Image (tube, rainbow, N blue to C red; front, side, top):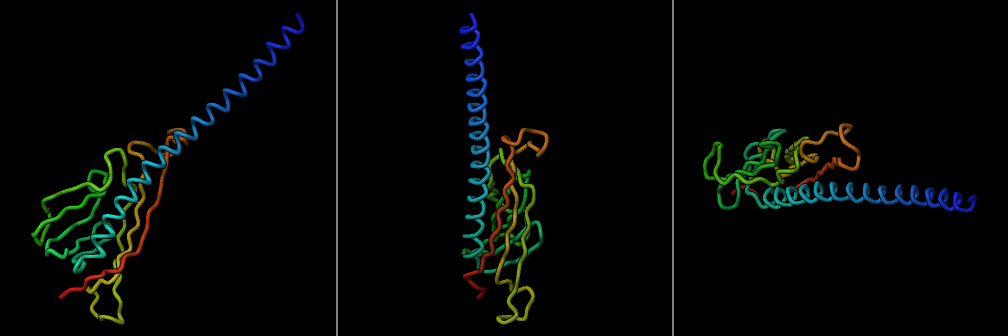
Length: 171
């Protein structure tokens, strides 16, 4: 009888320990999946903006929350936050709204912040409007999820930043 109780007791300890390990692995996998999706969306948005800005003719307007560039094909593109997502709008008009409105982040990811900082090089041009470099900084999180309101394995907040030098200068 004592041996049976000892076996049951030891099996209980093994099952509890095994269960804790199993649930720990599952939480880690959930966190990795959330981080992967946020990171994938951010890297895609950053790559598109970086390529378009680098190859643009010039920066037309720059504010902390949006950026308007003139593309090689003489169309304008505006980057901004729209419906909690990073959006790109292009067209020939000098003033938005443009046509061809595209989202650069998925509908299950939201933008916590988006900042543009445009810098001119006084050694090349004394005109303040002659922007030669653009810094981008944005933070993405899963949509509808706030830190502290959900378990840590369901939340990821990732900051993306880069500095881009314009390759093509105005004619």
